[in-house]
Length: 299
Image 1 (tube, one colour):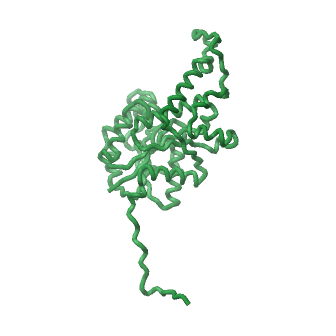
Image 2 (cartoon, rainbow, N blue to C red):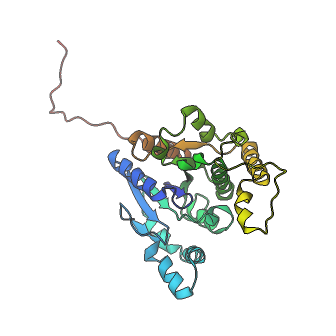
Image 3 (cartoon, rainbow, N blue to C red):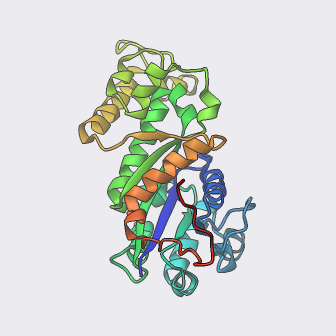
């Protein structure tokens, strides 16, 4: 029996849990079943109570207190503990039928998506090649307000590309919180962010004060440290990052406004296509009419 799921990833503050809430609301509206899994041991509140919550297994607060770890080290410890106790997931998810969409709400620690090999191990267990046999896709959320600062946008886009390479899953990149930038950027300019255009870095409006290569800079002088983020070397680095993204040509974004039902529906359709949800659904039997029901004849 097939199972279907989506991983909701992205940096802290990108709106992952808010997206999960909007997705659950939409699924309820269209009468589809879902199973909500919280995998963030530091989460505090939810609009919908998770059907399965990692905090019932281990919580970040307990780890930080008992192990004397910081938030980053504690979160990594939580995931290592989860990988040692995968029955926690297996017992809850195994009975689910193919009608369910399993939503995995992940934490915002960027290292999990870029270079620490914990999530790939979890995906190996959850995916079709693993014990759970779930048709998975990954969604990566990036906050739309990043477009105000092009350097920040391309850094976020690079993290999305890194996650795509590391997870090795069908991938849907989402630009969240579109309602926050309405009226601040034209549709023409927005297209260059939705399908990232490296030529954006040739513009001089990155909201940083550009310096020429000839400008003197003394890194030992604390009064000049801020100039590192606006000097010629910084601009060259940003252009190199933008060209790298352009060369791979892997990342493009779907726009999301959680207050717009049609926007959420469009995102769900991309997810369904990625996991081949509709192809696995059995056709429904046509409705059988009772013989006692009247038959209307044409005059």
